Figure 1 (cartoon, rainbow, N blue to C red):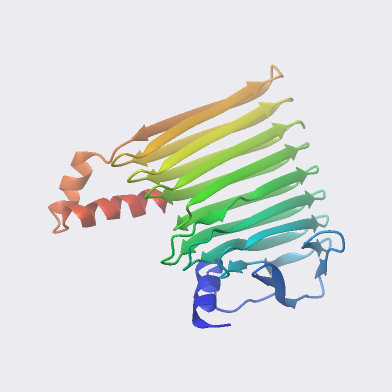
Figure 2: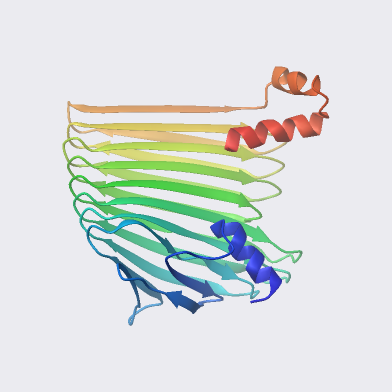
Length: 304
């Protein structure tokens, strides 16, 4: 790989080398793979993508599945399925980086499905990033499906770092008895970028719970939409929180919805959109920061 490709991998994965199992995808093709005793990765035969099998009772292992796109005009679609065995505990590091120096649009659409057996635990980290001097757009449209059996838990950490011109993120989850799903989204948009997020979580089993948190910053002429549906069909708990900072001529639409179909469903939603408070800027500027530096410090802290 050249330096651009290596830097993309490091940016989205947070590592310059991978410990454990991994599958690297570049410009629509798998280019490097490693499996372990407890984690197997198999190429799909019917569509483009892979199946990841984690044996039951696997503890504290990592799976890396980064994607990089450096070919302008490429539309990449991949279908990845994760089968997490009973009582396994794994980290999955995903994400996509696009470098586009041309006038043609480049896009990646990753469709990920997770099947967690009883007692399984997954921490899923996904970062998106775009760069390049061309006029062609960097487009990322991820779809995530989560199916959770009794006693399983999953934490999703999704981050849009910068440089993505258009993204539509869709997450659908079905939770059975005594399951827990925690979703944390962080994103920043600028220019004329568009970011749309749709969460749909069904709490079907007794004791199921979810917490959905979105923190975002919209600047210049960018636009963001946040839509979530948390549906309580049993004795369950759900909490949705959406906070956004808005600047310049940016627009943010927030629509956190909760639907209770059971009298024992405990569901809460919160939403807040506002500009950076003047007193925050003044406080930091008294410490010697310029207004621009103080503003960036506040944004960094908000998205931390």
